Structures are given as structure tokens and as C-alpha cells.
Length: 77
Image (tube, rainbow, N blue to C red):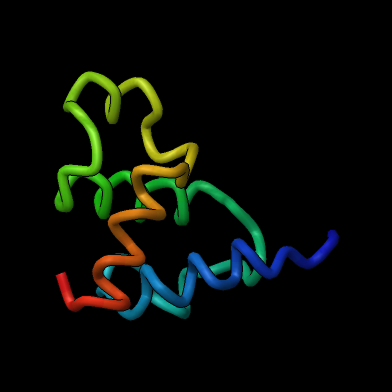
């Protein structure tokens, strides 16, 4: 399987935020464990409406999530 640095960065961010445990990660792979962590993080951080989050269900870490993640990383909120 090909290594994906974007997925690795996402995994590290979600681990830092407390939504993903290293022992449960498959490095560089957007798997079910990562999907659940993404969904939980998106929901906790109100990155979109409840209906949009339910529809996407953690399968995508798009522009709204990236914007929120950047504000957490750069500004602390």
C-alpha cells in the first residue's frame, strides 16, 4: 500500500487532540478507526451542521475541517 503523508499528518493531529490512539492506527491509511476519529473531532469542533456531518460521517477531512485544525494549531482554538 502506498504511503500517504497527508493521512499521516491527520493521524498525528487527531492523536495530539486525543481522538486517535497510536496503537489503533494503521500508519498512512484512512481506515475505519481514522474515519471514526475524524467524525468525533468534527462533531466536537462544530465544523459543519449536524446533517452535513451525519452525511459525510467522517469520510472526508475537507476545507472546513482544515480551517478549524489550522486555527487550533496556529492560534490554540
